[in-house]
Length: 205
Image 1: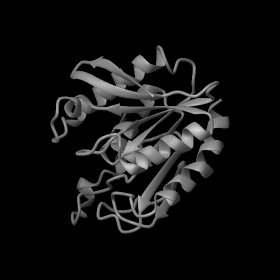
Image 2: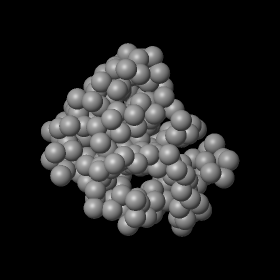
Image 3: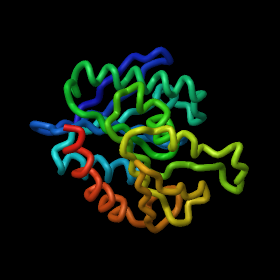
Image 4: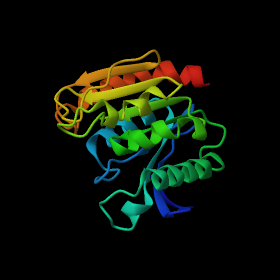
């Protein structure tokens, strides 16, 4: 594993690069709002991807690099993420099919920028459909998921207070034991990825 600093319009981002020999694709993952790239579900996703010959980049947004826990506005998050992906695709991950994703806030960013980054698939770990206890359709984040035009996997805790998204034409939803943290059954998270990744990587290639 190597750590790379990437300049973005909103400050430096930090990327943990986990390369494999002869990669078939690249998986770029972002973290949740107040957490980092060491969360158990992100680590599990990285391990599964590498075992399947996919290089992995774990991206720490500039606000986290600066030591802040409160996320930057959505526009800044998206711009910084896109800058990081463009940097990686010009170097370490050049010419590889890109699977974009993340947990919670990072999943939202990956969805909103999927077209701009050229992602061939999107992985969402604990997508926050709505704020806990707030079921106002006008405030739902589901349109961000619905706008994704490529194959998407959502791994969601069965008791997640942020809601359970429905499956869609290009979207698979796999409920697993636990809540928003996806810590109760990490193996179930890994199993969902082991089943999904081989189906989207051949399509990408």
